[in-house]
Length: 128
Image (cartoon, rainbow, N blue to C red):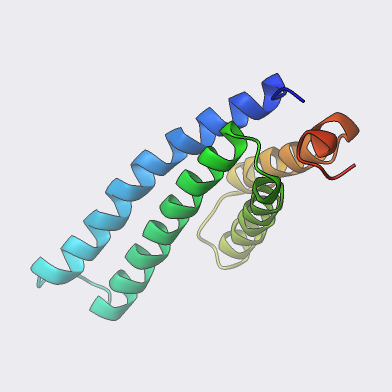
């Protein structure tokens, strides 16, 4: 079965999401390493930087899996969208996000989840 157009779009978006995440993760680790006057603990900066780099790596893996329509990519896509929803809600409840960013932080992953559960998309990944 050929790759659905929506999967191609999601693969490109996952690749595009990885680039700024790599830069941000490296910047956070670099600031924690080389800057002394940071108002948050170094361990926090390292943890957030490492988490961002892990997200970037997962996005790259997802981009590859979606592009090549690997069966495991469907589950990775589901997992990253659920993680995005949980993160958006968590950031909103702690006061780190406004209502508008909560809505977009939940809406887009929900739309992607809806798309990934469509029968033709599930079938493309061997999950019919």
